Length: 343
Image (cartoon, rainbow, N blue to C red; front, side, top):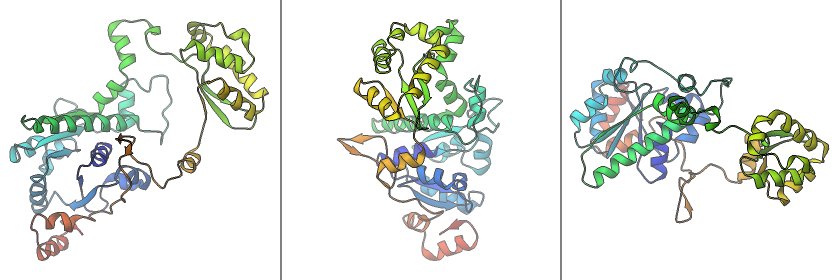
């Protein structure tokens, strides 16, 4: 859900994140995660367990074009913000639900995190889980959520009704593993899905750095690699042979790469247009970016979206947003004293 909100904010939406009182959004426990996903958004802190907080939520939601709900269905229902409850009170407002296993069914109440969905979708098969690695299911779920939100908004802009869009993390994980699952479901052979050939791997160089070679199915790239490394006897190998003999051929490549000076390797590969790149650390990437923060990968008319506008503290915008709902200073003070809001 945070990535979806970020995408919508980068596209120009006024995104207001409703956080519980401290500790707020769980992502705040990891400051880099929260900073990466929360630029250009406003933070309102409301305790939805308090009837006054829930009333303020619905007053705020009534001003929105779209509401995104990120709790599991039974938790959202207990708080009073289940998509059905939101639609009942705001029938002209579309709702996007992001849950673990969907809004209905036996598994709907079950909790889960990224690694669980990787396991259930087959993504962890023959792989070792790496705590702290890129949360691929979270990311793809955020992308699908943003697409669903944009579809709902576009439909209403064209005169259609408000809708409820459901996005389940398990379904998104299954979509991410669609190649392998399609092969299984249709009885296709193993070679029906991509397999890494020789030349598509990471190799150490003589100076201690690592080089990523991205030589995939294109025969001309494989020939260029063999020419660059003075290995003409390997150039005639087909893609199928490179897959079947991957270990053997990669060992030949690795030996040759280590035998040459690293700068010479880089120069030879660049001169022949071989797809290759150094393996960089986050610190090295940040140095090369030469800018203080990441922007959106999207661009409109040559302009990058999502210039960094700061990361909100919990409830930074509560007074401003609720003020627009005609909540006066005295009422805000009472709400703050009662722990319903954070200003």
